[in-house]
Image 1 (tube, rainbow, N blue to C red):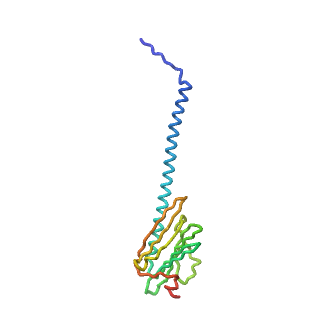
Image 2 (cartoon, rainbow, N blue to C red):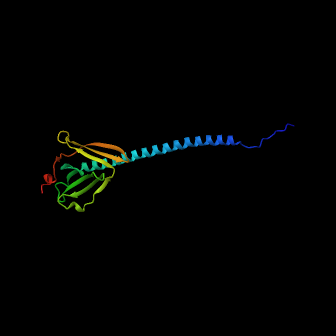
Image 3 (cartoon, rainbow, N blue to C red):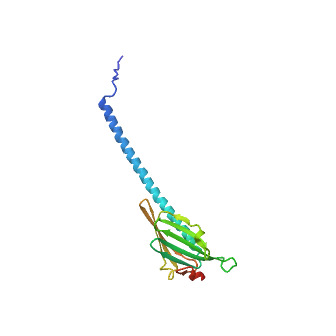
Length: 188
């Protein structure tokens, strides 16, 4: 019968240190890859969130522009930019209302608001609805409205240093006027 001699001394200190060093290198590689993946996932998530917000905001503005049947006005100064949308509801009926939709960009806070109010009624009590609080710029180009019947509006977004611009071209379905004030349309 053959006797097998077992060596039960265990691992030497050198073998143990080599095993720990190899394990640490593998762990470091796995940790680095995981960290990079998480960072990339967050960046992509931020980009997608910004693009979704831009699309939703642009769709809301487009929907409000579809209601315009009288005119538009653009106002831009050092503190804010405003696009006014003028329309009459239930035209030629007894309950006709002259309405103003105001899309307002506050340059200091980076917030884009919308409010709707009736012309000639005190607008101070009308609540403005926040469309986006990540806006870097809002611009409207009305130079093509008389020749081609459309306007171009651009909203630039900024979220944690990432900027993204959404430019939209909108063709009005009604013939409208470009004016300086609501008085030019509603006349009172």
